[in-house]
Image (cartoon, rainbow, N blue to C red; front, side, top):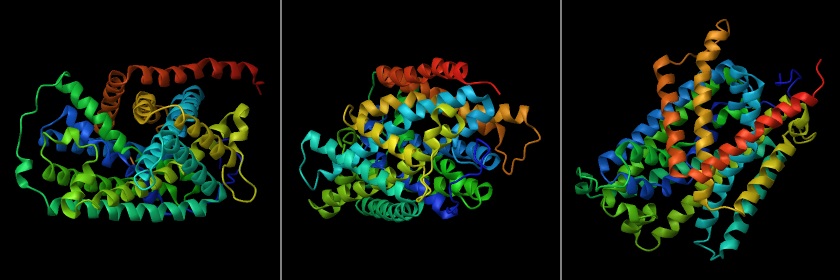
Length: 440
């Protein structure tokens, strides 16, 4: 059933490994090839760097287990939006859907598309506007592909996810084969302008952006064959795989590049491969990043349309967003709208601005979603819960999410306030809509 009580028009075609591919395809995007240098600016000790990646993996696992309880209890299309609405009521659900529509999802799509185009320009020199044009073109292509039918988006995602996992494994093996063990010795980080807790929080923002996407399969629950069983399993399998890959790859980075040089090594993966293959290594890494970015872009387009679909199904004034194409059985208008707004953001912001625009709102909602588990347990104790996460893990994830919300505001005050301002702007809109909606 759809959230509005009518039979869902979306077809159930996705199995366990399709869901795993969506998560892996979105999580292993482009961050792992970009952010290690930024993290090293705040944490130059190899042990601290590896420690923050371990912490990010554990935090993602805690979040995944929280989502496992929620997704098994509410196996419907819409993911986070459904959980917030069920836990807190329609107002917070509306604010989340509104913020996702204008801030989080298009910002993520635009960020991924920009990095794809930057690396694609390695092969075909492009002007700054040429890069933006290529990014917009990628958004258009993958929006059309997912509009054409779930089967095409699913098959594309599975192929790209498999290719990028093999590519990351190969890169890690190359790095470890040329590693110098001396680079893993403990070193004392130089003094920074930030206290250690804030430096750790800032580094963790970059790490968690790289881990971002572990909740993506919840958005397509309404199109899974057996969501109550397969959703929790897919989250756990995908996260264990990603954490293992990330730790292996970061160990290779640290083993190949001295810690005092890592902050200046923005193309860290290229440097690792060049040690093994020489000059041609840069092209191979660029190709790997392009494939990874395409997989993340396709997965994000696929899931973003489903979240917008769920938002439209719940609010009569946005009902067209819940329209399903008669032939392709996909949320057509939702996909097109997400694509258009993402393209606008590509043309108006840089990667750093886009990340600052989305981070604070993202982590604030993560904290609210996890805290909603306690609210649902108290208010609806009779509800069937095929999986139940342990309480200390929920508390840990809520606390960490609030800490990351603060760290995101400290890292990018203007971008964060812009995103949070759009969130709050949805509040008067919600009550205006309520006043104009006839009561039954």
